[in-house]
Length: 550
Image 1 (spheres, rainbow, N blue to C red):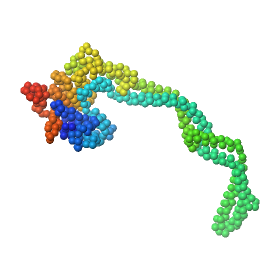
Image 2: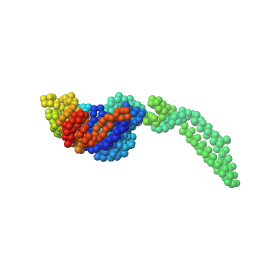
Image 3: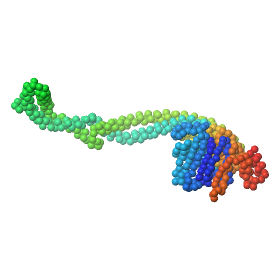
Image 4: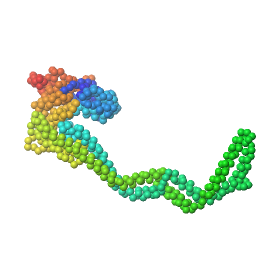
């Protein structure tokens, strides 16, 4: 509940600090005294956008702070989700700086207006006469029925399944679109894939082919040079091996004269062995280096194929061509398997539709079951509020498509008098009738929903006498289980309050200020008497006021 409200430098309010209690609180005051200013200040801590023009002193910041007791509201998860400190006495503060910048805090933690607004909607339900137009809105009508039908958990499950349904539908649409485009590209992609597959590409393949091509295309030069090398090593007169053999004999004779000569001999022996091995290798390579025009042609063909593929796909590396081959393979496979993939997705969608139909049917049955009771309660309450002939026609029809809250079309029609046709509430009901209907609906919803605090802003406009007395009684009954505020101009309503506050203007410091105070019992008598008969208090007005209070 709202336990305290502090406003500084807002419109006609200089400084205001007021505490509120449980039950039914009435707020009265003359027209223009500032009741709407009070509500405007409160709306800032509920998330309404700030307006720089509301600053009383343009050089100072406006601060609105409220304290709410939220221990029984089940809001701990909201605070956790938004990374806020949870306190059973929660402070909300809103600041409007002279620069026009606005800041909001929940328990001293900065928050966005979106978070503030979401919390505000959970703390106070504000209703003014113009908001009675909600009665004609389908969303609000469903909210009324669902409150009584207790469909919250079913709608939660339905909403979860509806998201899955939309996801699958989107995937199916994308698959069908992909199929349409893929069929056009399939033939071309298959051609490209075949080219790459026939090339039998492997990592390092290009380097091997280029090396092989160099050897095959220069085989005569290679053979000639190998022969020359072999001759230099094996010539009988000046061959390197013959000279090394003589050197080896010299070093062998020296090796016995010390470790230095022994080491030298080892090195010469190693050189001889290495050169002898080189001679054998030159001979082997010479035997292998045969002229093979056919093989050269094959290697050249493979190289040109790779070069052409690189040019066609605008890449430089074999690895890039292999990547393109894999990508094309996936596309071709996906296109060839698209029909079965679509069929599988259609089966998933059918299963999901079945789940949604089941949940929607359960929601609809609960709604259908509660409609007669809602209709009866509404008409009974309105009869007590001076509308004995008021009738409602509430019908549910099966919708063609899945809606966010089920699969129902709701028709919520009203007739105020006997013999008149049913019609749209906002078209056939007067302002006073709309106010009484809204109050009745809220009083019924309060029995089924946990509504923490409700504020009625002159919702009793357009009614008087016994009707206003009954409206006051309804709000008083509601206040037994929740905190109720009523900004009213009717003494019959004001007299029902557990607490009575008066909003008034006063001239101070060369200006006009709006202020607010809680009235004592005797002050309430005077206030009610003035509301009944004007400033000139008569004995009858005072007596009537005391009678109302008693």
